[in-house]
Image 1: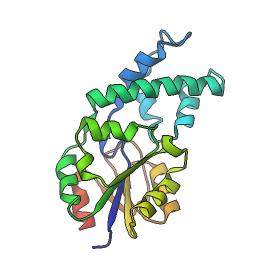
Image 2: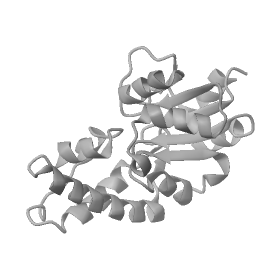
Image 3: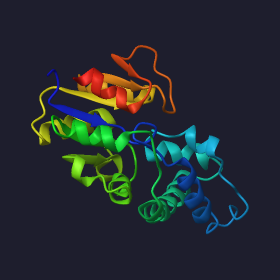
Image 4: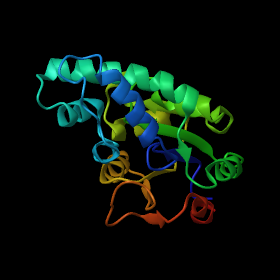
Length: 209
């Protein structure tokens, strides 16, 4: 077996929470003067999925100074965490069955560019804690994803890992960490030269053996 650990992106890899994120953010932004009639679209959110939170704020709320952008996004994230904990997202087909099988042979971890508490919404709303050894949100330490991958590997004594994600940023993070990248082609992004490609989540079992 070539890996002792598998690390996962969340959005576009394990679930699609776009619609519930959009709903929660549209609730949140109405608390700000000038945004009472703004409606964020699913396309806008999908266009920023996987980016660090400060970059998301800059893209979505560019008409405001940076400090205000971050204030708006912070409020969005607080409302989002509460909403997703209660409502969850849409799991990609066969995610839980595949994770259950993989957890018998590998240490499974999640590394996301989301805010503090974001991964926990997935683990709680879909009862996924039992499959995962560890996780790291960008919002907990503001460290780039590649460094967080290395951090999680070190923390869990993982020597040989692959990172499973769906965007070019995920690919670059895996290369920074010096590990294989498995491209979830069914997700939100495009990657030209991954180490491996899966067209559905359950195909992961075939690749990692």
